[in-house]
Length: 342
Ligand SMILES: NC(=O)c1ccc[n+]([C@@H]2O[C@H](COP(=O)([O-])OP(=O)(O)OC[C@H]3O[C@@H](n4cnc5c(N)ncnc54)[C@H](OP(=O)(O)O)[C@@H]3O)[C@@H](O)[C@H]2O)c1
Image (cartoon, rainbow, N blue to C red; front, side, top):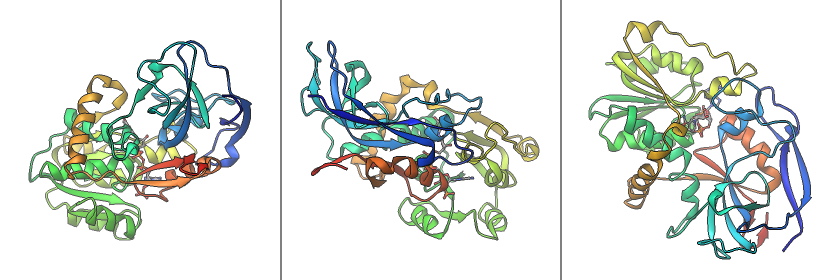
């Protein structure tokens, strides 16, 4: 099989949030398959903050995309063609996951793919069993101190990673105070994810509400945002609090991502312990975290929801909308449905 493929490459760097204006849509022919390559039809892509981060050029643990480079991403797809040599485990019709990028079809080596079998909902591979679930689980497993009765604050609590941190904290018996943007998200964090309270960081009384919700201070902070929200949390730390720095959305989204000031006063005054965390440092832990997250999902103890956007062309704007806070949980874009391409 061959034909015209479509892909998205970086056209120009965003100043704050990415969108369609930063992307060029390219049409290019499918490449002939070599050796044990297979051709994969991309059915779903996962939108991740690191994509927006890599569209900018600043010093970070990731490498910036080059202008003209394909935007990378985790995807869920289907094997639709096989090369001349056997690709064991990758028959036609096999559902696979891998990091193949914003394109309709991709040539891939077996080592670039993982077969997805035995799941009622394969999209779980892009949510609880992928970056968001593995990040929350591994960060808490390695650096958390999830003591029943102690209080954990989770920022971006309705977000992809934060939503799992909230649920894992509750399963561990902690009091969990979420922080999210808007009343609707806060209701979701309390009523669906099970947080004890969720505070709206946009509310005028946010600082006072946070102090009221944390009479003994936060024993642990699971932070994915940084910026003024987190600084406000730092005003309410318990002595010897643990702070897990998992993300920096506030600075990443800003026009000055390389500048990321933090009010250190209370970190020092409360003798807090700060852990920076990247899941990429612990690939040896992913299989274990995936197994535990799957067991918790299958037991109905963890809810793995996602927001679905349909349509290849909608991908760049959906990334900007996600980073701006428009959606709840992990955001997936569907490129191919039961009736064909979308
Ligand atoms: N360390 C790791 O291994 C690892 C792995 C995955 C992700 N991360 C990082 O973790 C962070 C969260 O990732 P995610 O996938 O879970 O994304 P997310 O939290 O689902 O999405 C971003 C959310 O950030 C909030 N937000 C937007 N602008 C903000 C601002 N200026 N200040 C504070 N919050 C803002 C919005 O939530 P509200 O509407 O509630 O404000 C928005 O929904 C990202 O920075 C990502 O890079 C790290």
